[in-house]
Image (cartoon, rainbow, N blue to C red; front, top):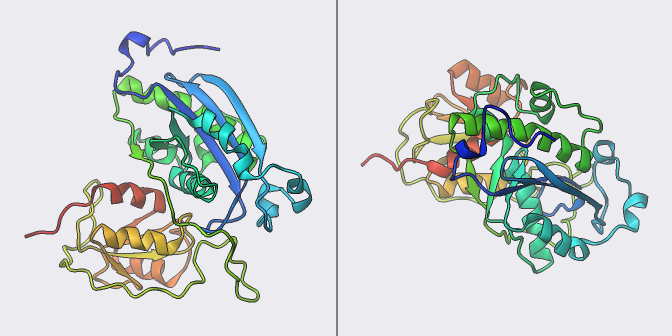
Length: 324
């Protein structure tokens, strides 16, 4: 294994970079806050992104496994698997003292943090790094931000998509050249703080008849009325500039984070969460901008800026205060 690219030596490696990484992938019963992990994989990497070891486990979710057609894990396969509390210590040993790396890391982190909360433990993770955010920082010429596109860019072959072990391997192999490119350019890594979560449910809520709540990110709970946004609308979002308090933000389509949680975070940051798109809308957040939904059609007709969920969660970490 090549320990360092010729162009990047240990002497020139940025001193501020982390000393180790845990590349993680989890497969789950769905995307909502009450969903559970059914398999997990961790590749431990050293400071320069070289693989040290890897680990994989099935996890019994104690419920319906959800989208079997995606992850391939049936109830029969998971019946004899360990419960999350039984693998929590080993998982912790793999994560301890390292930066958690994942593709759309906010999703993996939330699922992991909730499992630890259910087990009355705390994951030993202080920071995470999203490879979607890193690819944007590096301006990689990708057609989209899917893992398969990142893998193809670096010549990494996917063997079993949505298999946690293979997805973690693919991401580890794609992360190493990304990390070296960042080091060569002395790019600041987009590290985010990992805070333990308490927003979880021990059992899934009863879904409506004919509605597969376990796989859809939108909640079946009645929407909560929020107080009015106290800030004036400063206008539309401009690319490469921060969001500003008072901006009107609308959401369309499925999100990896429970929709109500995502809206709560936008509101807490001082944004106006809008239920529809109008000429006053500052930004539309959607993971499928080509979908012919009423909101995306209106946004395009009005010239409203559109960003995906990963970009929006990055923007949320640095919202500018309202004018005045």
